[in-house]
Length: 493
Ligand SMILES: [Mn+2]
Image (cartoon, rainbow, N blue to C red; front, side, top):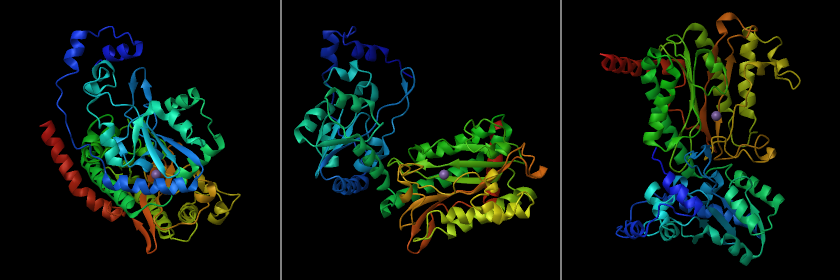
């Protein structure tokens, strides 16, 4: 990483200790005007304009502020790659082209985007500020952004003056952008707190159903992910050959996501053997043994920020053992039952109920449940949750756990509507030290996760292109493992 101490210290102290007139004269001149393709997504931008009108109609007498968010510090002067607030991305269509410390403002029918003025060629900040474009690369000008969005774009410093001029009650999405909050506080802008919470809820609830274009984006994210899973299978021989094989699994998927899409939509879980029974296994630094199952929960995220969320559990050898087969088939049957219940007009909870019914019956059959399946499934039982502790479904979209701020009656308590997109992800987790299960089950964790869109014609599985059945998985893995072994022997020859 390049040391930018010179630039940041200069701008923070405002003393510009290293500035000279001679350097300034040289640095502010002779930069060619460039007009690169900034990669704006026309479809996303047009859809966002429709969304803004829908939202503004819900809040007719107020000013709505949707900040993009601030760069988050990892440590000291190192920040994470910026990822805009999902509501901001949804209402601008800017995706990865979003800048930190911006604010979309909706006042009745009018939208204005406030943002930091670009520190481009010709300005002193260009090279004196660590965020200047000399250091960070060229960005669209305000005029270019205004043309792309068909929305006025103004410097963020003018936000308070604009709000004073409009003179209506102000609602700001809470806890998104400290810089914007400070600006409003300094300007003594009166923020309606209750209204702000209602705005945050409305932003999440307006994403509960997707447009066909959005479903298409999610299919693209799924398709990249499917190729990522194939890369992972091909990398399994290498994973077995090193001491931190799970990192090989994680890295193989990440490579595909970074090359063909923007990134992964959330931290991958790459878990082999008993690590697969730890739900939030994020170290991903364990061994991958030849006779293990390996569980990968991962999804690619596009430049528009739509993400996939897929889990497969695969035998490292390419062949399931008898007990692995037994557990896997139970989870697959639960998943199939859940998907079949993902029907428009039925309760959102039906897929979950269908999945856990299958799993409780299997646990009873294996003699693991201390009670009958029916007793376990009753409200005051729930013993099956020792081995299947989580929800089966969550909404998916720009966020991996999309729409999470929705009111319960519109989420878990809702009815399935056309173009809702959600996961179906049952699992069974027998931890290595779980004395309540037969020894041969211990250390086996299986989850199968697919991305489902509800339609009037029934559920559509966006991730059906990734093998799910035991026979399909073994057949799919075989040539990929062969190729992986060949590549490994070439690399080590
Ligand atoms: Mn999920």
